[in-house]
Amino acid sequence: MNYLFSTVNPFYARRINRDATRNEACDRPVYARLPLAPRNASPVPHLTSLYHFHRAGEYGDRKWPGNCGGNLIKDLLAYFQPDGLVFDPMSGSGTCADVCKELAIPCISWDIHQGFDACDPQQFPEPESLGFIWAHPAYWRQKLYSKDPRDLSRSPTLDHFLRRYGQFIRNCANALKPGGKLVILMGDYRDREAGYVPLTFHTKRLAFDAGLQQCCTDIIRFSHGASSSKKVYRSSFIPGLHDTCMVFTK
Ligand SMILES: C[S@@+](CC[C@H](N)C(=O)[O-])C[C@H]1O[C@@H](n2cnc3c(N)ncnc32)[C@H](O)[C@@H]1O
Image 1 (cartoon, rainbow, N blue to C red):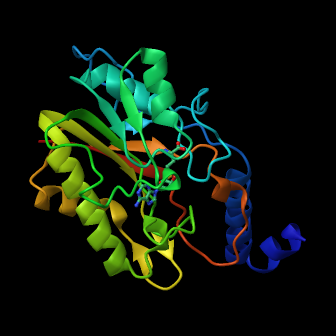
Image 2: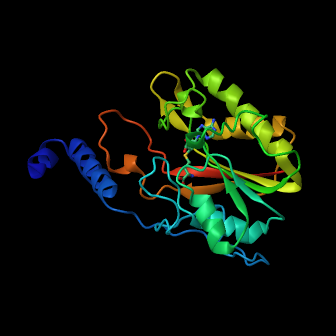
């Protein structure tokens, strides 16, 4: 068949071959050579702007929707060596708490599933009481977490989500000690009604509005094991294979 096409129309044959290569590339992992990182005095030399760890580690529960591996949290704690309490205000299956337990770092870890609303300033820990906040919020309604209307994933519109998400970031900024770190893991996604939603851009905008500064490079976390990777879609789009981890300081 290919022989026939290449004889009749060599340009069409080239297009067919290109498609075959593309589909093969989707079916198996591709190994990319990463740039060399410069040597420096970092206590965690493998922590660079490109974060890839195909094993999630024994932290949290992989079955929890939106569960993230614990190794990135562990590396960030080793790098920043926080002063005092660690707080995870949207803890899901408790990945951050498990990492802190292993490292013997004091940690509080709450979620809307226990009735804690991270967007409510009255429920948040006291001003200047925390050294490090790890936050992995809902990516608006990409995944739904609970039936509680205060759950960020239940926000009916993008405006509503951003208003509450902004309040959450202000709560974090208020609760951080001077020099404390707020780490947010967030991803962009395409919403059926709202179109492409650049949540990482909004995160930075809201954090700067809350008086925080970004204190290091974005960390692009490869999304190994994302449930969407194995799906087949009819529509055409450029797949996003990463989340972005942003570190802010007060
Ligand atoms: C992406 S998941 C976090 C997953 C977690 N990092 C893990 O590894 O299991 C987001 C979490 O935010 C919680 N959440 C959503 N809105 C919230 C709110 N207003 N207050 C507190 N938690 C909220 C959800 O219940 C969900 O568990």
